[in-house]
Image (cartoon, rainbow, N blue to C red):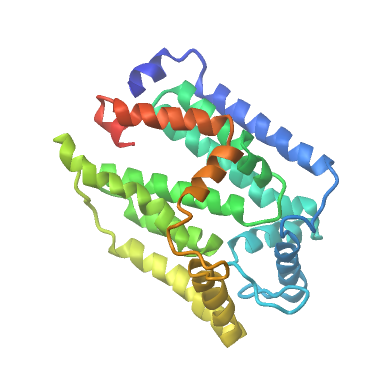
Length: 305
């Protein structure tokens, strides 16, 4: 299905990528032209982390204006700080550009892989949907880690899919997984690796695909990058770094008894958020998933993807 659709497509690949890029540029320009509000949606803290890097040189572990330890790993902060240093000041452009480029890059990835395994039209509309939903639009104009986290998770998942199907390339998967971890913590690896559950029902297809290739080098890079930053940041900030990053952010968010919820009782909440904030794309995606489940593609690569 995928190859035939690509051959029958009337629009060349550059046309779709150009349209995606123009839309991304327009969305970013629209946000820059609008009045900024860095006090909304918890943007002031990431902004102060970038300021701490630029003014004080605290690349390993940043603090906000109150002296509190950073609540997130530093990948977004590093990217925004590099833009700010190149421009000579910390402004909205420097704070918004990493998220905007990430949203644009995620759309490119969605189109590229969707075009290959489904069809150019499917990949193109998938890319548009990723930018024109609530979450995608916010990535173009918020000083937050979300956009950077989204593209690193997406890239990790797609690199993992390629490594699984080709039996090589695991090093790049683990390197990107390390970047996802530096964007927002180890949950990035969990989200990106969730697609490997497909290997379980691959066995029922009659054409199971085993995991091949050496992963030791990639795992070594992953540990070197993530644990290396963690140890250096701990050496820089001491025990308060552990208390904030591990105690409050990682464990505290995973086990929160503030409202006395039993784990798992709010399983429906993320799905309702996704449906409500992604309309109309979420409705179309739900219908598409139902169709995939009811009548999987007869072509193994497309079905596996």
